[in-house]
Structures are given as structure tokens and as C-alpha cells.
Image (cartoon, rainbow, N blue to C red; front, top):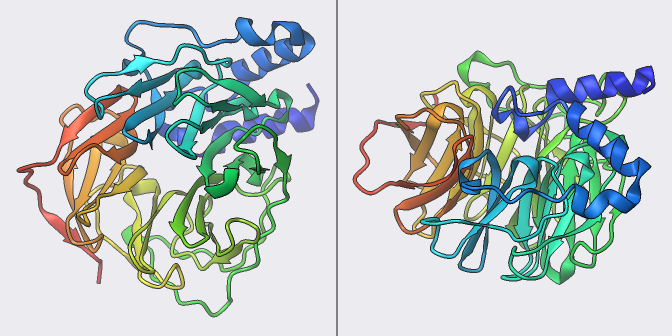
Length: 378
């Protein structure tokens, strides 16, 4: 392996996006790279030789992302493990066939049957049977650019994002892919910014996208806000928005110089952004300005979901669950007793969360919870 390639892999190990969930999580893709090189040398062995193993208690292992496919829930994680639930998270079944053992980091569905999962080695998988079986439609193990999230839109449009501003687009529900250079317009130099919570200094607006490996900033999360608007949360305080379904992007003024691991659009123009050391911000104007919200934790915040009732839940490391019942203006800290790291969350009822993380998939009930609410910092 050449020195530049080795340096790039080392950089990926230090700064890999959402998969910072565990220090031992194979965020450094050394073992995955070796497997990818062997697969490239012998393409005929690619399918069955690297298919995810069927394992007991698959839903108890490391899971990174979760999504709804109609009434079914589906989660993805370590070594190509994919599990699904037909009863809103009470029980889980492992997928019958997944042609990859890569760490899977993101999943989305175009409808109740058709979905896309992404992960390390630039692996992209598609399903046409609600997650029971999967097909490999893209991988690039030598690129050393793990994919970190994926968004499924209307008309078969799918966008996968990842390390070094990797940005892949499909217009046929994930069957084929093309790489697009991610070149967002710079943030307005005069954009209003809130001071960072916990004493953080604000990041510079319109900072050049680049790092020591020569690529762009890691794109950690991509989410939709409706009417063609998308948001991306990135490393080093970078936030981006698109108003045309991802055809063009603009950099938002950021309230924080540390990495963001998620964005959650709320009704109207409201949006939350969250990331390292418990940092959480709310914007009421689609990211033009931001206000910090006290969280009562310095744990990394990794995933969020909103309820039809207006409630909002955010999860993170150390068993952190933040709950808002006022549209994301203030949050109560619900520290889970086991303090296990949580990576992603979806609603599983009016007062129940389905979460995934280092302990696999489980339900967290919210009815009757008691905690002290914390509001926007003044």
C-alpha cells in the first residue's frame, strides 16, 4: 500500500463519522480493507464467501442505524448484520441473505418493500422484499471511504454520503450509482451565529472544504425536511442544505466548530443539529441562525426522531436519551441505567422508542418518565 493511501486510511481511522460509537468499532478499516483486497483479487468468491453469517441473537450485537419500512422496523450494523421486526421492536429476525460483512452504517426505504443500506468499503445493498434478502449493487474497498448514511427519496432517487465528502447518487432505486463532486456554495459571511454551548468557539463561515488527506469533510448524516429540502450534518462544524432534492447545496452558518452527527427537521422552518460533547442547537429559520440548548450531558449525540404528537427524542453515548415535549425548545435528560451507547432511534408508539446501539436493538418506554427539562441557553 502506498504512503499516501496509508495516511488516508489513518486519517479515516481518526475521524470516521457516526461510527465513533465505540472505540473498538473497526472505525479504522484495516481488517475491512484486507478483506476488500482479497475480494478484488478473486471476484468469483465475492458473494457467498463474504455473505453475513447467520448468528444467534443477531439483534443483540452492535447495530448502527434503524429505519421504518411501512409497519416493519429494520436495523443494520456490524459485519453485515441486518435484522427486522414485525411487531414494532418487540422481537427481531435476522435477514436471510446479505452479501457483505462490512460494517453497515445507514439504511432507508423508498417504500415498504424497496430499501437501501450502506457501509464501509463503500458497500451499497438493495432489497426488494422489505429486507429479507439483499443484493450488492456497489462497493469500492480500495477507496478507503466508508459510506456513513443514505437518503431515499421519491421517483427512485437515492443519495449516499460518507467520508471525504463522498457523494453517490442513484436514480433507479439503488440499482446503479454515479459519483458526484460535492461542491456546496459558501456560507454567507454575515450570517448570524449563536455562541457555542459549553464554551465552544464558533466555526468560520465558508471555510474551505479540505483536510490532511486531500479530500472534503466527512458527511455524517443526510435527512429530508420535505418540499425538496435536504440537510447534511458534517464534521468540523459543517452543516449543509439543499432546496432542490440534492442537485445543489449551500453551506449553512454553523454555531459550532466540532463535528455534527445529526440533523432533525421539525415543522415549519425549525431544525435541530447535534453532535460531539452534548452539543445541541435549534434554528427557527432553516439554519440561518442558531440557538444552543442545554442538554445536561457531554456525551456524543448520535440520533434523533420526532413523534406525530410533537415530541422529540435524541439519543447518544453513555445511555443518553433526551426528550422534548415542546417541539424541541427544551429537553429532559433520561439517563439509561446501563449507560450503553445508543446510535439511532425511531418512534415505536406514542410513548415508546426503538433504539439501536452497542447492545443491539431494544425498546425504551417514555410514559411516566421524570426528569428535569433544560431549555435554550441564554
